Length: 130
Image (cartoon, rainbow, N blue to C red):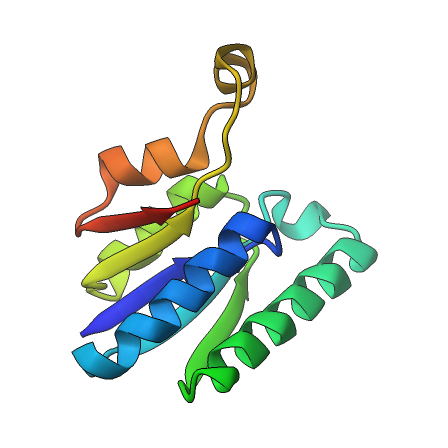
């Protein structure tokens, strides 16, 4: 089984990493933690460095649970939702785990919802956590 976790360093995404770590052992799953950089090649170096720090943190959370995971940063220029769904299709992911952040209706209209996009478009089950 392959589990993909969307991670951006937020409290919600940390909860997603923790949950994936708890599921990995009993399911015998391989876990991949992904950060998506929407700006692609236009990303600033400090933003890329911050994302790398977030991924180190995710790896540490998984290690605390005794789970070895693969972490990586995507800079394809897609939105995070599109990026995770595209990757899940490419790599035959069995489960996507994402954190959901409570937003107002206006924020959802203006900014969209990464989790909503993933839930609607993913080629596999999606588990959300607050």
